[in-house]
Length: 266
Image (spheres, rainbow, N blue to C red):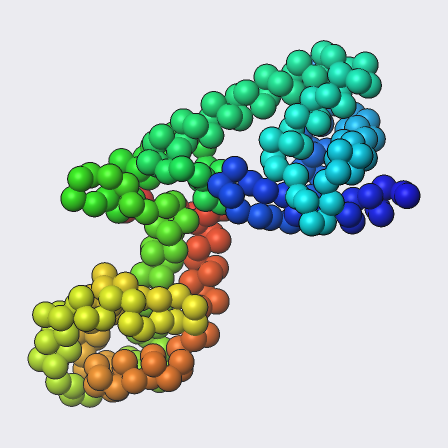
């Protein structure tokens, strides 16, 4: 059985959170490569060869497409493979690397009051997460963090997307000189809880704060005579999915922030 056949027998791995994700041999190779680099022996070919041996051992130990290995199973086998192949110094570097990763993961979870790390938390360094936790993540009445960084960035991306939506040609015209019932729009500010996660743009649900922002945008533009429709008609258009194309913009804003290409300051 060649390596591609061996690898295909293991399709998934079990993460620490209990979630199941696709098996990726490249991640094993990359971890080994970092251990090699730490001992001044950076060698991509050797890293790939050792990763192949790790996969072979996984199969030999009975892991299959129906019996998925855990992250710890894989890491334990990486250590034993490095030692068995005569690379004890690299094994030591890998053990240190594994320990430091575990320590960093634990520190991040403590900062975020979380039992596991979401994808954004894994990418952001500890200091960035401390800033997010202290300034931006939602907290409950006990001052406990109740929001993940992923959820926070999605929340911000939706807020920006709502702002874009308000200038859509279906509802906005720069020189419309239109008159709308602004009091009707203002009346929705008194019942925000009734509209918490009731409307969505694509797959992105609007929470009551998004809804409040949309109302305030509408009132400002309507006061300028630039709204072509009533607020109730705006909601009808959203419910009819007339603005779902803005979901792509929301995703773009989300990815821009989570890749740290651009981060708003407030």
